Length: 41
Image 1 (cartoon, helix red, strand yellow):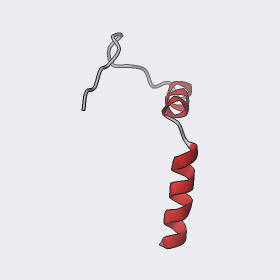
Image 2 (cartoon, rainbow, N blue to C red):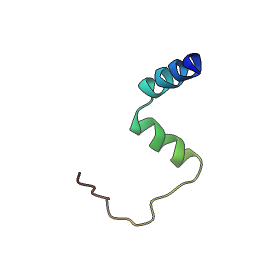
Image 3 (tube, helix red, strand yellow):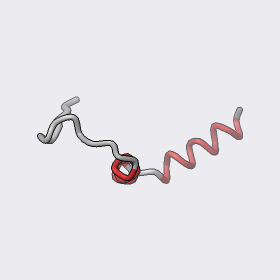
Image 4 (cartoon, rainbow, N blue to C red):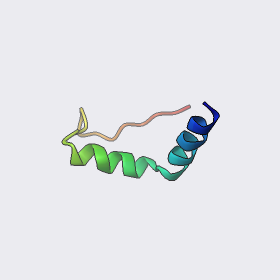
């Protein structure tokens, strides 16, 4: 499990939100609304 966790953390550390959005768009995923979403934490 330790080795798997290390691999997962490495992969997540190399992945950006922009990359995830590009991958989603390439697979045909589109925004549910044309307006930009705004999340505040």
